[in-house]
Image (cartoon, rainbow over all chains, first blue to last red; front, side):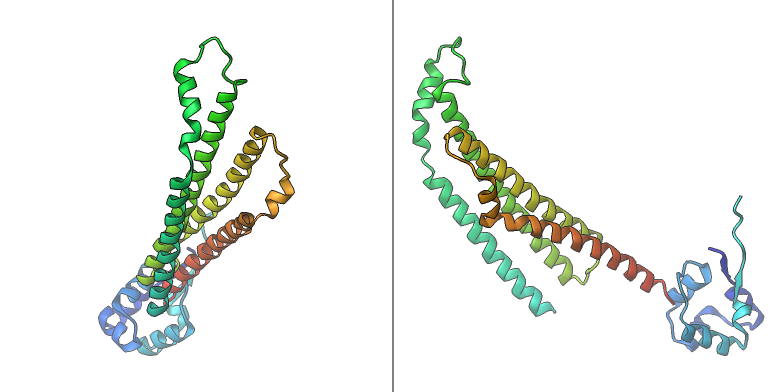
Length: 71
Length: 174
């Protein structure tokens, strides 16, 4: 998938643990793990908003589009 | 929902048991003694005699086709038993499961196979009895509603396949 999730990087920058973030934004650690691993098929705006608020960042700090290597 | 499932399960069991008892009763009433002559003929038959043209062989064919009709009725009842499996899956909360898709396809297959096979057997039976066989009258007979019902189950299987995909997508939406 060409959308890469940089949640790990932001968590390290903010010195926050996954469990802590999951509690703040109100999702399970299992779901947060799915999001971090890039297995998620979609992300709700409400979740993105909560993550940005908790980590004090912009959506672009978490998500990045990297073009697939077609060769 | 659970109450509805329980009611449907009870209704399905009643229908299944009634169908089985009707089938068993029909089999019991079927006069196997009418083939006594054939059995005697089979013991003393001249092996050089062509069997296909023999009246007794025709009787044997009639017997085999009648047995075939009983078999297909049993197969149809077996198809009905899949309703119980679907209801069990629903009871466990697995609405769009792979099993339900499989069961819908199986029920569709059984309904269509039953209708086509019974039509063919009835045609053969009519040919043996030298009576007239009107294909369109047979198609109008009550059992042919199973063809649209079978197709409806194929459509349900496709809908459930899409439902399963949507459910998976929903589960992976964070």
